[in-house]
Length: 245
Image 1 (cartoon, rainbow, N blue to C red):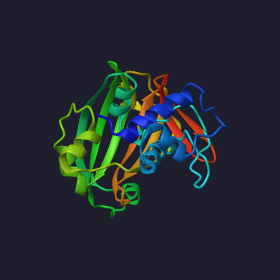
Image 2 (cartoon, one colour):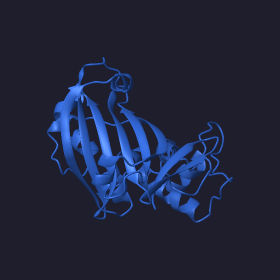
Image 3 (cartoon, rainbow, N blue to C red):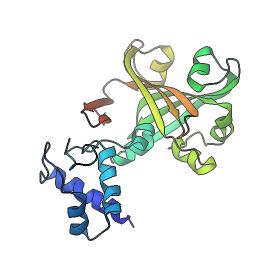
Image 4 (cartoon, rainbow, N blue to C red):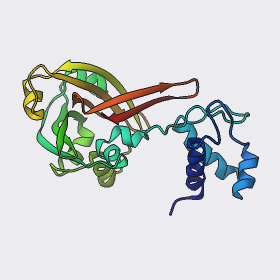
């Protein structure tokens, strides 16, 4: 059963989507919302915080919240986890580890994972499918403190993020994404069933815990025509949303 603040947040989302609170307009005050829903102002603040984190409303304190957009952005979990994103979109995700092995960290590994070059890391090569079609090659590099947990994950595990949380309580809290386009090399072409040199959308990402400790860095390569990423900027928020093409 959803918490009361989650129910209120969902009702406000629907109201924004229906145009009851248009973009550029304002939400009722916390006191008015608390009276309407017969809850405390603290409960209202939790509901409003959810909408703020999604980029739907502005975060300015001491004033009525301005509506910034009527389209829900994706949660961090959905952006970080291919499986969770697919599930939220009503699609079916698959995954299969092609190979994984420990090796000495390169200088790039060391910089991204805040470790010493030459220290052992775990590299994992995984192929992802969406509704039965191969769309993504993932190359993940994990520091040693995560490696054993990753090695315990079944090769066909749908959600690595969920598996690591269930196993050792890791929470992927922050991520930095760099997006560009590249041509498919021989390995990528073979794994995705495309021609060598064909266009790929590449997402390089470093993810950390709440405390800023790097969990992994990855190089994800999407087959052309499979997904796109949309960014919506405003004073109050910057949204990154992954879409099926």
